[in-house]
Length: 186
Image 1 (cartoon, rainbow, N blue to C red):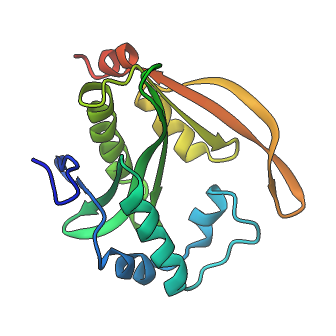
Image 2 (cartoon, rainbow, N blue to C red):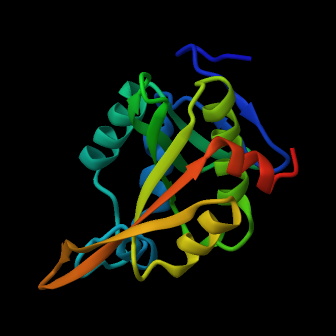
Image 3 (cartoon, rainbow, N blue to C red):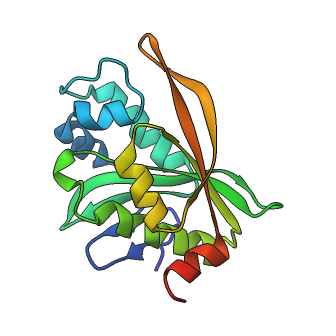
C-alpha cells in the first residue's frame, strides 16, 4: 500500500511507517526535547524543554521533502522518524538516520522494529546493497541496536563531532543486504 506522497506504508507488529503529513509537527512539539535523546544526536548542553513551532515546521518540511523518509507510529501515536539519505542508485547504497522523540519509547524494541521494516524495504523495494550510518561513540544503546540488526563497525572517525567544547568520535557502521537477511534467517 502507498500513501498520498506515493511512499510505501510499512506495517509491523507494533509500529507503522508512513509519510509525514500536516499536523505531525504538533506531535513533535508535544513530545518536547529530551536531554537524554538530544545528547545522543550531539546537542551540546542538551536540556529538557519545548520545541519551537519553527523548528517543528522545519522538521516536517524536511520529512515531507525527503523521498525516503517515514514517521514512526506506535498505538496511533507519532513516536519518531527515520530516513534514508545520500541515496546512490548506481552503487545501490544509502545512509540511514532514525530518531525517537521521547525516552518513553526507548528499550521497547520499537526502534528496532521500525528499522527492520525500513531495511527490508530498502534492500527489496529500493534495491539497495548497502546501508551505512554514523553514530556517536558514546551512544551504546544505538550501537547495540544496530549490531543486533546486522550492522558492523567499519571504522572510527576521530574527533568528527564537536559538542560544546569537547571533541567526540563517530563510529561508521555498515550493513550489507546478505548480512541483514542472514541475521533474520531468510
